[in-house]
Length: 124
Image (cartoon, rainbow, N blue to C red; front, side, top):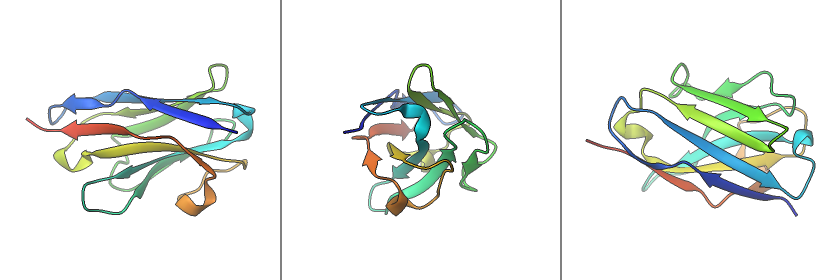
């Protein structure tokens, strides 16, 4: 059983930064591609970013490209999402997910394990 626990969410002003963390336990972390998704109030959950199990070839949604950075530390079994230049429209619950594959994916259905989510609120 793979367990994912997100942390690092909170309230931040527009233009500010946050770093989300997702700690993974229960399996060989390095064998899983990882992804971040988010769900805003009244909207469907959407793709944010993904990274290969080796840490290369990150992929981002157009809405966050150039502002968010996904990374991972396989020695700590943790994946990160650095979020800069935050906007009110980034307000959402952010989820990390793992996929037992080499490459990442934008499709939620391809991820087998999910965290409980962490709230990010961007407001003045």
